[in-house]
Length: 142
Image (cartoon, rainbow, N blue to C red; front, side, top):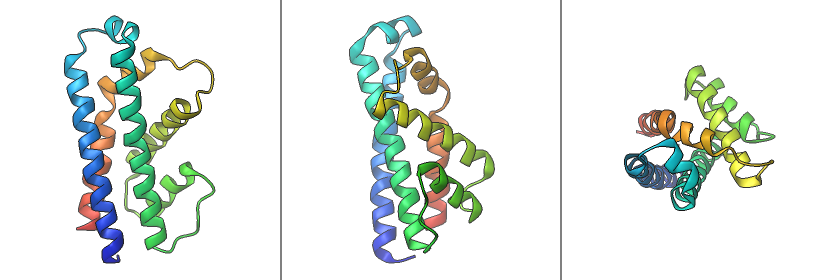
């Protein structure tokens, strides 16, 4: 791995750590599902930091693909698969990150009405998926 790529990945991992920190604080502040669904400040912040977190994961995927001189993926789902095929991430983690990429696409492109309850569930149950990705990539680049 080139030193430039390694440095860019470390910078992205730092950003991801920051976004996950914000999401964890927001999760602690939210008293209930009902509060989350009805409070546009809470919802808007969570949505934005989830979007930024997943985009950072996507950016890291592409940095690794370029550095490893892998075939350019058709989309972000294929980029996740490429890291699994190179045994950088596990199959289980690849499946989780693929779902997160799908969520990011919904948040960014607003395919229909965004289900706030689903976003709440992701906040409560799936931040560890992003944390696992972060740890896995950190171990890989070290």
